[in-house]
Length: 248
Image (cartoon, rainbow, N blue to C red; front, side, top):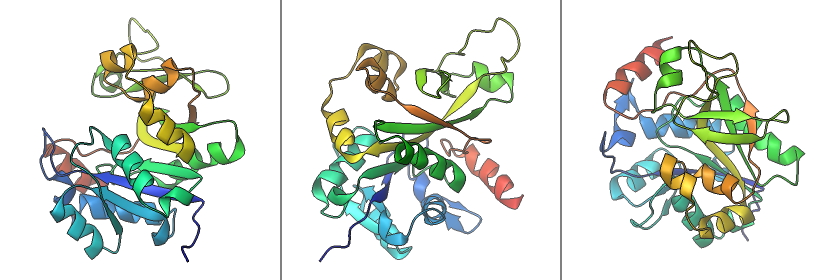
């Protein structure tokens, strides 16, 4: 008899990365990036609620070595959301979950309070189908950077738009309400599967941001406001930043 899980955390984990191949198995202060992400998830969930979805044998074996539940997914998945959706479709225990958390494997410093805040939005509002998180932008360089995704929200903390451009517009300096999107998503399981069946949308393709597909189709995305963004490991140089942060 399978035990029922109301909330599942799925960490999509691919080996190939154009800017840093194999980064999830890179070592930072004695532990891999993936292990650190898994341990962050364990600060919020029981081990039986956490799954690592991958199409790579080395990552699959490593996930089992660190005590995680590993799920095979196909190599045709274009992004992390496709990978977790495939895992949900194929894994019996994930088919029981009401809420599915997509925690990116290359964000090993995601604060447990950030994860919890995003989950609680869906728990409090049963009409919501998707949530994420954002933190204040503290420097103009990040505000202007196309590598930092920005989000603007309404008075009820629903996302109005996500962009790689600096929004809201500010000719000089940094606007007080500038927010950096944190790449963490919580889905109602039913909506996750519906979301994957939606056709790509113009703004999604233009900005290369899949969450815009939800907004363009009229769905609401709630945004949890938190204090600090998570450090993502995108290039080898980010390992030094992570180790400096771990030393603190």
